Amino acid sequence: MFLLLMERDSLIKIIEEGIGEGPIHLCLSEHNNKIYCVNWGGNVSVISSDLDSVINVISVAPCSHSMCYNLRDKKVYVGHLYNPVVEIICTEGDTIITTINVGSDIVPFGICYDSIHNKIYISTGANYVVVIDGETNNIIDVIYFYGWPWIVFFNPLNKKIYVSYENPWIPESSFVGIIDGSTGRKIDSISLYRRGAYYPFCLNPQENRVYIPHAWCDANGNPMDSVISIIKDNSEISESSTCFFEIKYFPNSFNPEYIILPFWIENIEIFEISGKLIKKERRGNIIFLKNLKSGVYFVRMSSFKKEYIKKLLIIK
Picture 1 (cartoon, rainbow, N blue to C red):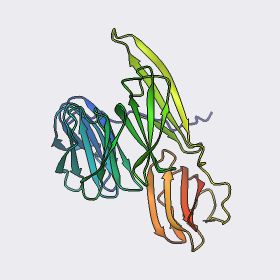
Picture 2 (spheres, rainbow, N blue to C red):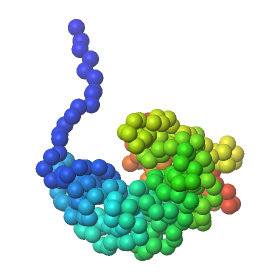
Picture 3 (cartoon, one colour):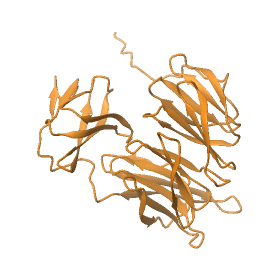
Picture 4 (cartoon, rainbow, N blue to C red):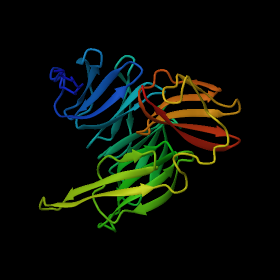
């Protein structure tokens, strides 16, 4: 009789020492393999992924609420409720390098990173979204809405930022404002016909759809809407059907160590299925993929002022 031993997931550790009061948001610093955990009580725990333990604790303002990671400049951005500042941590030394006042005393409900244009978008409890330059740490724009912005979400496939907000004059509906990441201008607003778009969005890059959960309670604490809205960008599909050139895979198409593109291709970007940018090349016809894990990826390329997106499946 033979027993077939299946690989299975298991709990390997619970980290308690060094975790502050109310861990609320996590992000990964990929270049040095560290996890940053923002704690509601007013600090950030730095976790070594190699050791699975806290190696540093960074004091920040209280009511810490949200964070995001800038891979290009190796920074973590921390926002707070009831405190109008965003603190920027350098992940090389785990120190706060600057604090930015974004003007509203109930901020931020959300932070997202535009990995293509190196900008950070911060929704505030007031009627605007603040834009920070990832390189200089300066506020470079303020985008106004007719209401209170909550969640900000970056879609790398169409270079747009989605902002959920509520209009006080139309209380029965949440809205999603859409910002063109290339110009920084608000280009559209969509009524969702339901309230409560207060929680993180999810991207399906294969269909270029954004999923938005709704949940809220009335003044008496009774649960109200429990639905999900779906936004689809019909102006651009996730995989180009008119790509006229060939991508060559070596040694094979299912586990390529590198791909070969025509020499005129430029601005090559590779995204995970979650929409996260993991590789960027200005130009080059040989793109190495050896370090990519099994999964679905998207390769975005430009040629002759046109953009093309092709799906890449890796099985190891």
